[in-house]
Length: 107
Length: 394
Image (cartoon, rainbow over all chains, first blue to last red; front, side):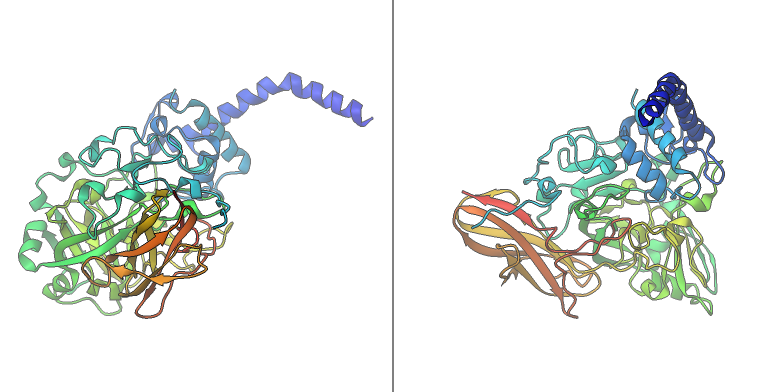
């Protein structure tokens, strides 16, 4: 039974994965451009060509080219004057914006 | 001598003037730009090849580049919380104004006027709160500084105490001295969330300067020119660059950089105003030579040591990972309690592998611990063990 369940779930995931990935990328870009709740848009402070942002307060992400882990911990804990957004965003939102920035920075 | 197990990140210590790992330094959470990446335009005047670039606004001086008592401007690390102002932003430096508030005669005063008011020179260590962050075992946000977010420099400026006296003294009830940077904040964000505005206990104003000169040169914009609040003995963040406002206040600023930023707390805990702030620096030292290899026989072990706000009493050196210690000799002049001192000890080493450590103690008895307890953001590391270097003698 368990195998059938896994098989069924696997099938569902296999079909749905592309849509989920697209949605996650969209979410990450959306947060970057619009912010969420108490968190302002990343674009206000950061330059990222994929997002068309020209913020100059924080590092130019196209030059910094951070990996996912670096973005995730920076968003969660803050860096210097960059506030911590660990309470303003859900883990899923932080993951989404981290994946998005890491995948497009420098391109 | 037994081979030592190299702890995590010891391989990042680097040889004299090089970074062992080449392009990448630090963990995934703190990767650095390639060392050979050209310096950003605003610091293009600095020594090429002398820095690890963690980002455009964070340049770490390589461990082997630190040697003299005074750190030359072109070797001094850079950590700018906000982008440095440009010459266009500043205009005529002499016409730069700072608004002095919380005194009997509050007013704006120009740099030219300040230069005519009084002058003093102070040698002090400028050190980022996160210097040594890369030695912590836990994952931390921010540049993975090792030893090079520090330098010892000579500031020239007007004593804040003289300025206060000239303006009639501070108001009753003042508890804090608050400096505000002149960087502009873009629309769309709450200024308090990113502005550089720091408050320090009012007592610190007695040693503070408004400085316009760094090591005998006009204060470069990259280091906060044309005017910077300098609080000797305090971590770098309190030394507000491009200072536009100096206020004597009853309460500390509501800026996030003060309220929740730069606070010491346990790993996993959010920043809050009731936690210790990164104010006074602690006692610390590190070896700068040798860093990786040496020839057997007479080996001079050199380094630098600071007491934070106290003068140093001793620096000891161990070549056996702390099992035994010998007192080193200070090599340079004593530039006061806020400056660092260079030290040396002559050793006689046979071929083998040595873990070389240094341990400083102040006249007040404060001494470096073997290990420094982890804190969430990786501030204030002064543990002698993590700062030790593994040297192969052949």
